[in-house]
Amino acid sequence: MNIRTVVGDEDAHTLGFTHCHDHLFVFQADYTVLLDGILLDDYERTAQEVMEFRRRGGSALVDLQPFGAGRHAGLLERLAIETGVTVIACTGLHKAPFYSSTFWFWDASTDEIADLFISELVEGMYDFNKSDPFEHRSAVRAGVIKIASEEEGLTPLYRKVFEAAVKAHKAAGAPIITHAETAESGIQQAEYLLERGVRPEHVTISHMDRRIDWSSNIRCAQLGVFLEYDTIGRFKYHGDAEEIDLIRTMIKRGFASQITVGMDSTRERFLSYGGSLGLHYLLETFVPALRANGVGEREIELITVENPRRALAWEKLSAIGPGNE
Image 1: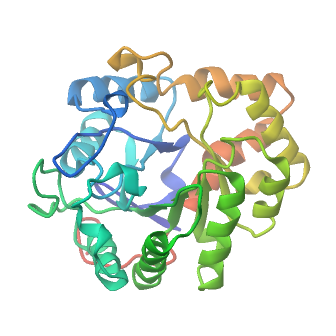
Image 2: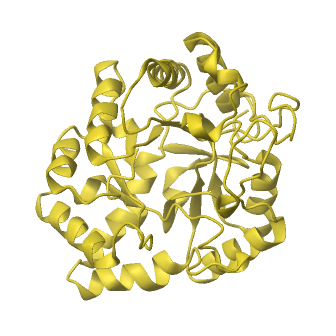
C-alpha cells in the first residue's frame, strides 16, 4: 500500500498516529467567502501547532482544504519538511458557500472538474493566489480527493462534482474523502460513489458524528466505507462523552476496522492562534478518554494507525513526479 504526501510517495506502513481531518492553512482570497474564525494564515503559528502535535507523538496529518478554498500548497510542503510530520493534502472542491458567485466551478463541466482533480493529483496542486486560483501550479501533489455536499444532498451542482471525483479516482487511483452534513446524507454520498464503481475501501465519509445518529452510522458502515469521526472537541455539537459512546457502539457492532478520527479544527481551536484545544487534544485528552471508557489498545491502534493507512492508500500510484520516478 502506498500513499501520496506533499513531499512524495511513501509506503503507507510508515504512518504512525494519524489525524485524519484537519485544516492547516486557510487564506482569504477574492474568490472565497470565508469567516474570519476559520482563517489559518500564519505559517509560524501553524508550524508551532504541528510541532506540538509531533512532540506529543503525532505522525501524520490530513489537510482537507481543497482547491480554491484558501489552501496553500507551498506552505504545506514547507511545513512537512520543517516539522517532520507527514502531511497529505487534497484536491477537490468544498461546499458552494465557500466560494464567490463568480468562482469557476459554478459553470464548469464534469469533465473540466475531473481534469482539475486529476492534474492536481498527478502534476501538482495550484498554489494560493489571492486573485486567480489558476495563476501558479506547484510541484506539490495532492494525496486525496475531497468533495462535499450540503444538507439537501446531491443537487445537480454537487452531482457533477461527485461524478468528477469518480472519474479522477478511476484515472489516478486516489482515495475519496467527503464532507457530509448529516449521517443520512453520508449514506447518500457513499451509495452514489459505490454505484459508480468506486470500491468502498477507497471512500471515507467525514462528519458522520456531527449529529449522533447510531442507526445511520450502522447503515453507512454496512456499505463497507470508512466513517470519519472528526467532531471531537467540537462542543457546540456535543461533548466527548457522546462521541465515545458512538465509537464504543460501532466497535461492539464490529466496525472497528472502518473508523478514523480527526478534529476538523479552526482558528478558534488552535492554541497557537489563541484558541482553546490544540491539535494534540486528540492524543493527550481524547485517546486517554477512550481507554478510560473501555476501548482497548487493539481498537485504538486500528482507529489511529492501521485504518488511516488503508483509508489513505491509493488503488494505484500514477504519475511522474518527486518520489515516483
